[in-house]
Image (cartoon, rainbow, N blue to C red; front, side, top):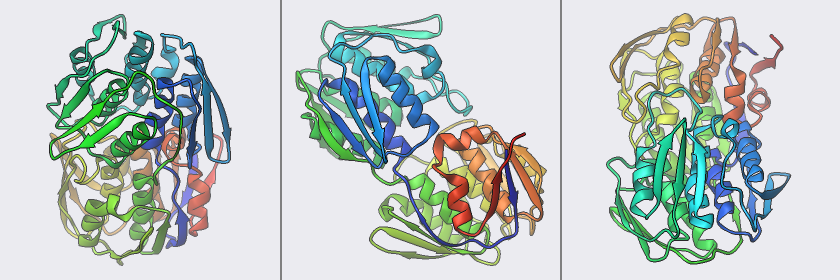
Length: 414
């Protein structure tokens, strides 16, 4: 449980960690080669630890020191991913493609993770079938086999991040060209393509597609994980919601463009440097309308934290969630803290209040937890946020970093 004394203005600098959503597929890319893969700037998170356990269970050896992972071994891989690990987080499902591509078979449980409503893996399975895999679903697991995958053209009805990464990983060892039409273009997806290029695959991005030319064998590589744009946005919102001034260091400002545009409309003053962003929060935010959208649109992962800011804005905000149907786990706890929010299908109508109040609330997923922490920082009195294990999945040293900005945050048993 996290105890937060609200009402303190946050000021200072915070260094942003490597991106969780870039680190996870990079770790799973190690399954494509027996040669060493060295990853720098890897955040120490529960989800990353799960990914490490998973590749170890499949036959890899991992040494982790000071933010650097060295992944070796795996001349012979095991085809079955332990269900208990896969069900901890959805990204674990990405081992399916590399295993089929490398050893011709895989059995992977249907994924778990945050409760964000139905997120079917149909795009993953249809894409792998197009590459020549025989796919069967039953008893809570997916089994896939292929004597040899082959390059093919795959059209995605929606630019799914997971499906795009799955097909990039599988296509890296598939002879010929794999063409993904309507791919996701999130920075973390592009970064996976960069890593695969370092390992020996050929990747080309065009206007509406990405093409990967596979190779029979991939080499090892050394790669640095990009900064976490969602963590950066969360700390910038911490400054904005408390009327403080926070500078996020070690960031890529371009990755935050859509978010910063909306934050500026909410009344925050923003300065941008080559690798930093600084936000000066307003005395009280202004209402803003926005919709989540695949990159370069407003990121769905920053929707809950942004709603926390708008909960105390002046006026009415309308927030439309287009990516995850049920990404509203933060609403009920925010109501307990005095927010006024209506859920109308996939739309939130937020009537800003002047003050939020401390309460005992529970996080149901990573980003909902971040929203509750932000609300607690701005609220009057003391708040207790349960479900802190969700936060540990996505935020490295959250309490320590917030305290470095002047927050009063304690981790307690209970």
